Amino acid sequence: MSAIRHHQRRRKPQTPLSPEDWADAGLHVVGRQGWAALTIDNVAAFLRVTKGSFYWHFADRREFLRAVLARWRFMSSTATLAEVADIPDARARLRRILQMVIEESGPVELDTALWAARSEPMVQSAIDASSAERIDLLGGLYQELGYPEREARRWALSAYSTFIGLLITGDAARRVLGSAAERRAYAEHVVSLFVPADTGAPS
Figure 1 (tube, one colour):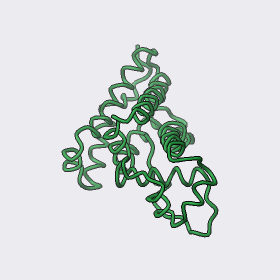
Figure 2 (tube, helix red, strand yellow; figure 1 turned 90 degrees about the horizontal axis):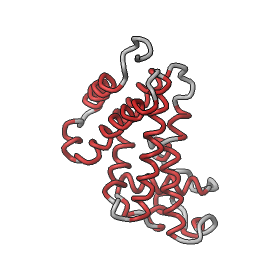
Figure 3 (tube, rainbow, N blue to C red; figure 1 turned 180 degrees about the vertical axis):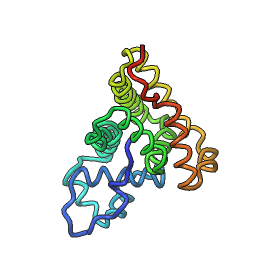
């Protein structure tokens, strides 16, 4: 459930590109234009390079699509944990994750585009795997707060379902959360619902 700030700016054309650079650029294209726009030409144009650079790293478009989805999964779980790793308190970490997801438009835009393309088997498979990873991530935080595993997973599922609700409601959600102030207010609302008060470990 991480932000996609990392690929909002174009790289300088003279800078050597890595497979991760191509995957990040692919995520940018998906978030802005949708899954169908994820072509080699579009990504090369965004990076301001020729397609020859692409073939240094990927055999074909299908291999590239797998790399883009793998990168999304990494940013959704491992990178999210890394971003809050320096916060020692589990409650504060959970709060920060929920704030990041709701307040920053990048994660919602990107995930919305991918959920809209879930009729593609490759995309659906990535969504299923990512959902399991995200619920595990959140469940681990609730367990740190003292909840037994089964209850922690129920809390995690509820919190994650709220995020998915933003994706499914699409334009309706964007109208309600049309400004940074509205996003912040909604993030605090979500935090109040899914971050338990610091009253000690639950019984």
